[in-house]
Length: 179
Length: 308
Image (cartoon, rainbow over all chains, first blue to last red; front, top):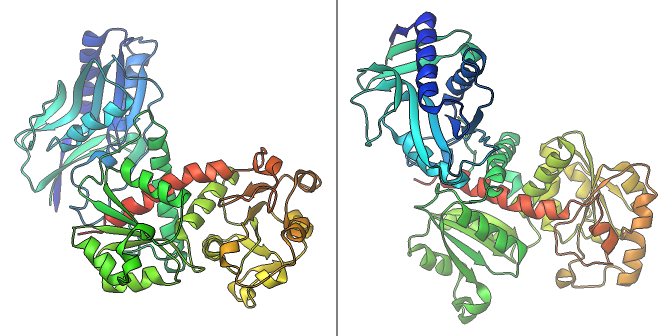
């Protein structure tokens, strides 16, 4: 197993600022927009972007929720182990709101497919967008593309993209791991 | 990632502490799901479950059926009363006939102890025991512990007394196993005739004075007198039973601390507990019913993930 650094902390920081600005450009005051971090790994990125938008770009209020998609996945009973759930925390209505899904890596698109079904339990959004830090091109199983992307990566199937966050792993860094 | 150590849920006896914690954590997520406006998830859309009830049930049957439907499983129901069992069909034949219709899981209630264990050795589907005679009722014990955990934060170290007909009660036995596994202290209380002779060998205390038992406990689980299982007279009259082992508001208010009152249902109001106790702030009887759906969703979800 070998690994190389795909993005360093400095590069991630620059990308986060750009993504925050792109969100700002489209959603301005976030009155009609809600951000939804996809569990388990998307919540760190969602948290970070929300903080950035509030502290650096003066957005007063952002509705931020976390969505767990475990029970909506299409690979139940296809793996060896049962799928373990995480907490869903959405304490606002998404009815008629613009929803932005936030996840760290977009790979096959199946998680986002599940998230599109799961979010319906919380209302009917007027529009759904997708923001992803890493977009693994050429690996998609479904016709799903991000509206905002941090970096596009041409990784082959036996390579794994692993995003580390300061909050969880102690440092911001993205590795490309060759299994 | 963790998974259950068993393929069937036949009794608490076959589970370990980790299994119970996994079921509780999974139930936490399902409890959030069933409190949404859309209470359904598509996880089990390719699973078919047969609910086979050879004995009467309202709560358990409804609860299982609701749990299965909230997981999007296909459900078929079968009650022995209106079936070929009356015509002399054996249990294995009945179940194998149902299974040949491509059923993946069987939820069964049966009057004979060990019916689920017997079945699990002869058929391919996952078996969930929904009560087998006076043996076990594992999902009830799980939801009881889950309700204690929800109300008091933890089950370990708590004092729980089970009051009533311990001799004929599958709820009592499953509860004893579940509570001991989680490190709770357990006592049973009731007329001597309704306490099994060797109950202490399970590591539980015995108390025949209700007031003493209630003063000792944090939680009292009040069981119903199962008249349908009483083959001989175990106590003189129901009135006398109520006087000695029934909880009323006056008794509850005279205790040193506020204890939690539980009841697996159906309640015989005025016998084991009075109406004002059943409906008091200290009672979590309806929480138990709500938690029953979440617990059964968790059990079915975790067992279904092992079906290949």
